[in-house]
Amino acid sequence: MSLAYAILVSLICEPKSGYDLAKQFDGTVGFFWQATHQQIYRELSKLEQQSLIVAEAIAQEGRPDKKIFSVNDLGLSHLKTWLLQSSEVALVKDEFLLKIYAGYLIPEEAIAQKIKHHRQLHQKQLEIYQAIERNFFSSPQDCPKESRFAYLTLRRGINFEQGWIDWCDEALELLTTWQ
Image 1 (spheres, rainbow, N blue to C red):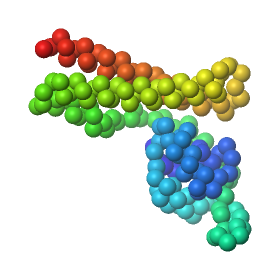
Image 2 (image 1 turned 135 degrees about the vertical axis):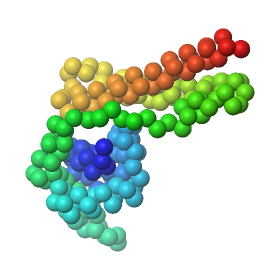
Image 3 (image 1 turned 180 degrees about the vertical axis):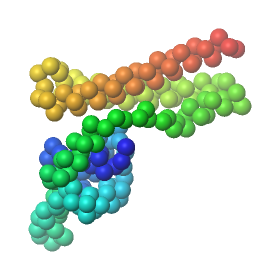
Image 4 (image 1 turned 180 degrees about the horizontal axis):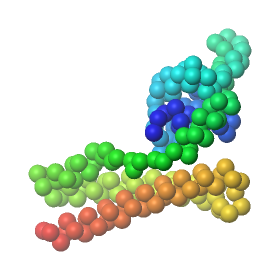
């Protein structure tokens, strides 16, 4: 997936400055799509050159003008076309799994400690997602249409983290039976 589409999706709900967009990538969108502030600003410039977004300059006292970006009709059409295209299964690039794959090269206790630590990280992330669910989606069937789809991505995040926790528990159990 291209960063351009992640930006278009983020701007579709409401116009934002590059700074506000980058903050959003640090939060909601950042749970499943990461980008640095520099990458975001570079992509905003490209999208503006392609006439998929427009920027409104807002004068600020004592600072350079602030640009507020919004998706125009061409950008919306482009985004809708992309949304209708099929998506491939995402390839996994996971340094942790590579270390586990080669785990036979180090003591099993060291691998067990890595798995326990990884489990804690996923448990913390699961708790964050569950708090979001409690605070914002206590009644998902009553959510506005836009929020329903955010809820679907949240549920995927919850299932993803729970899957990791389950795998860590299984791996730790297997390690104890192999000794």
